[in-house]
Image (tube, rainbow over all chains, first blue to last red):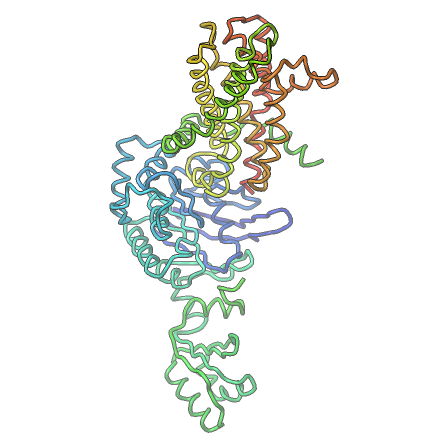
Length: 313
Length: 268
């Protein structure tokens, strides 16, 4: 058997009558960045909260570092770092004090805690903020501190629940950079997100979750190529003319989807398809209000699998 | 009532406690207190001083004697207890509710080896510390006013600590079911203020109407005042041990409840 950091088997989470997680199975290997992708309310956070021992497992198997999380929570929690969705820093304390107080919960010796705190302040680029009181920090800085705080115990597993939700693009890229560095240094990561770019930037492997179930599992690239092809052609065409317009192009179209008023065609040969469609449009005298050829992404996979977009609900 | 039965069942289970980590939770709160105590201590401390002046030196002129004592001698020791009670109940309602809800500090702690039981026990310790501290500050004022009559008074922290621990527990139980800040108004109006007024701080409970004279016996404040007053005045009696015993028994019987209830609220 392989050395899995997390191994979940038929994992179920129920809140009263509501089943948030409906029997999911997956395994995360050492050194891997594993993503849970899905819209809000898909059950990602419920899964993650079970993994870090916050909420009890309703049924199924959940092992972290090969140990049962329900029985060995304290020992397991000593080896993981958690970045939760909402900031839960100590707002009255300074940046540095936040790190030192948190080190105390891991029973770290004072001088080791000081050393780690300095390393983290440098790594997260927070050195000149070290004396500042947390409640006065911007959202981006708070997030960086939250991630830094989760590293205080040099975790073998870092759990990130929507780490960049609510951040501006600049702050988000800064966080991604740091996470990539951590990944390079061998930290195993579990990441939940509803940002496709985030999942494709960081994850080696991911599962797509919808209504508490796993829809698909694979690498970001593999999923995109397997389901929708390399490119997506978006066309603003009257619904009446859609079938007529794409007639004779079936050999190039791997999948199709309607998104609002647009028709999205997935293909491996985008330029060729676009040209052929344009020709047909001219000869049929059908007007195309809008056209865009772009690389296919995970959003398209999700759209294809569920017929829904990620940002909705 | 399946909810009550479940609660009773959980109360009889052994809590998941690690004392070194409980102390870390306590220390965290202490560190925040160190930053805010100046603004904080005035608020809790000035009020009992005002009571002491207004009622002790003011009203006291018209009240000849209470139980053979000048009124201010009767009142001052009891205000030590009530000021400690207020300090603890404010901290364990508004303070704990903020840490638990808005700030999500509890959530941050339990993502580490700290358990939720450790967090709540750390809160109880902190509430106890704060009450004792404010009680002692007021005790110093009483002593400086020349109202401490006996070295027995050095033992005041003992009943004080037991009483504020009981109030930490009671407040946290309320906090664990409080839907919002406004609901703490009910806690103070229904429980804390009546205790303050009728549990023997301002007048002996014997003066209450016969039908309700037994009620103060059920409150921690009454028992604490019954011990603190003789300690300060040097009129200690063996019967005071029964008041201490009441406080100990109260704590032992109730301390598991807030641990279960806060966990129940936060963890699903």
